Length: 226
Image (cartoon, rainbow, N blue to C red; front, top):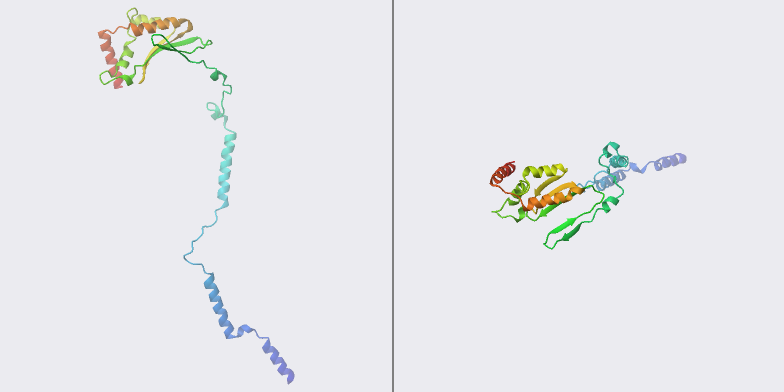
């Protein structure tokens, strides 16, 4: 009988403590408390997910491909516009003739550039008589004189003037800007004295006949309409 009583006591001692109703109730309370604490607050900001690394990899590959194209450009696109200077020697640019300005006793300023290797020359007269110096009454005078200046002189008719320039292979022209009016001639080196004589003649001895003025007025009005 004593041995049976000892076995019964041993069996009772092996029963788990969780079977107690008080322990079960305490476990439920602790689990509720833990879940309430672990739940995130609804007011807390939601952090965005980490960026995908593959996006940056693709961008890096695109940049590398562009750099490779710049390092090895297509020769077809370098035919007319090379990123590298075609002329590495700047001796010709640095050795450009110096412009010398000389003032004559009568106040006339002469600017000269000498290049002995050139076979042609350009001589001209720059007059400070552009549209900037005109008033409402004299508006258009400089442009009108530019047209009339080649209509013959006292010793050269219009035809004689044109034939003289063409026979020596020269070019006589003029233009009017806001600041000045320019008359110039492009000729060979040996024809510079003749070109100077022609420029001096048309600037000092031009003939302004009435019929020429009326005819040239119509030409200028048509230019303004265009």
